[in-house]
Image (cartoon, rainbow, N blue to C red):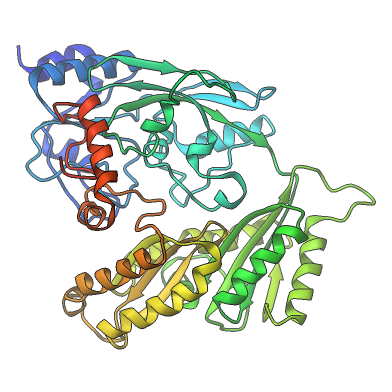
Length: 473
């Protein structure tokens, strides 16, 4: 009996996809830039089926690429060309096992779509604060495996900080389960953090216990034009105290990206009539409902922005008057990646530096990139509340995609060298995958890479789980 027949006996016909047409959606990344191969796409329906498939593949020496919603940007869930192993999709494992509103937790399977979990939490008057542009299709297992960030890290932390317990299928096929809703547990190494952010190279996450928060009852969302990034950072610094620690999100926006959304995304409206280069999308929220005699978040935010205008930190601003206006502001922000695919050629980066150093970094990065290519157009955007910029450089006006492509490597080297000088990170929230292996090898201390390789060899000595990702053995 062949390996495929053995796998079919475990997952059934519904859990096995063969043939190019059936497998195509799983073998190409979201951007459409990376495509790989696989002998089969396997879709198990339980942790036990995952474990059985892993044992079969280990016995046969066949590699496995785990995949969630296939929304990653670094190729972490895409098999490489010539990959002769299987792709293991967690999409059928999509049960909410328990929602505990008293304990503020939910226990879920890895294939649950993030938005489904957000809605389930909201129905119980709770909040799952992980918020991403891809939340309608990304899956929580992928979010955990990449330690996803998003728009509310400034208030709630990234995915790692939302996890209390995990269940993981190890490369041996054994099941390690610590689905415990414990906030305190000092019994040795906290192993769950080994698998969060490991991009499926150390184990396959199958279930998780996720922390919840009170559902916000009083939310204020504002769109403000600011003179420059320095004003944006100062505005954020003042907002923490003015909001009494209730800054939920703070996003830096750039006119080039806003113009792209206006051109390519139907149904959105520019929040302000004037044209400026930099904007801030600022949101404050409280779990306390608006009550008589208590000032609302919107009122406090309006007063704060008025004072900021007097100080020259804000040029103009508008506060959303209803949910539709707030949704329009967030749709603009979350559409930057989609509109960018339809726009001019660009070199894009996902990086972080200390928040207070963002203005200096933007200025020096612009100079460094223009030293390589005069006329290149910077459009830095991102989550300035946590120091994470999605720094894009668009081609000079009229330059072809082919001509611009020759500048990718020198711009990348100049940019990443500057990140290193600032003590920053070349991947703030998107991970390494296959795209940034060379950059991590270039910038990471050798001792750091050696430790990571030692962990990988200890857990996966045959290098069968997601080979060719993060680093080379």
